[in-house]
Length: 232
Image 1 (tube, rainbow, N blue to C red):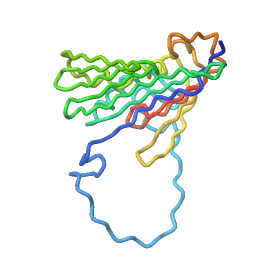
Image 2: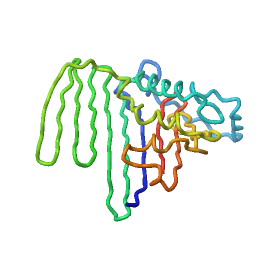
Image 3: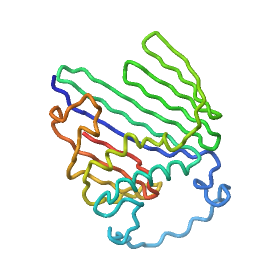
Image 4: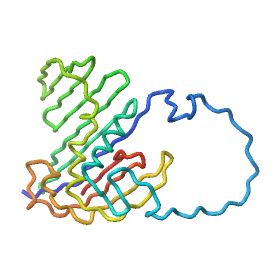
């Protein structure tokens, strides 16, 4: 059977709670509008050279400098927010037109110690809801459902998606960083030059012999969390 990874994305999106001062500035109050100044000619800002930029720990102008440090930076930044979401999707297409899909999603409310974790492989969907150091599990397979609950300490770090992102840091060699300005700060785009162990990044039932090509794109926010990743 001829299979190839069509699109795989891993996206870490920060969602801040209402009233957070990081969105509004100062004490969170909405600033009063100020008079619009008269327009004056402005010069185009000179781009800052890569070697003069401050990159998140673990990264540099020429790629990922230390995979372990970069992974730790992602976790530390994500868990430093009041709340966040992480989503990972993969679809593997076969030569006969059928698809195998997998979705992993977390939604974390760290301030209140609550979180939802979801895994869906197209056949079985597993929901895990964390609250008050207890996890409630619901497993759905077709028309059948099963429930369970057990004590488990709430751990924000394990819900940041690193089980999917760490291989992209460790087993890929990236080229020069490309700064991209956004409304939420600068994002650095890294494009792969060589993937050293593609089979480690993909799911266990895909062999390297089945992979036609492998390219990775990594989007790293200036704060240090991985905002997005794509490999095809």
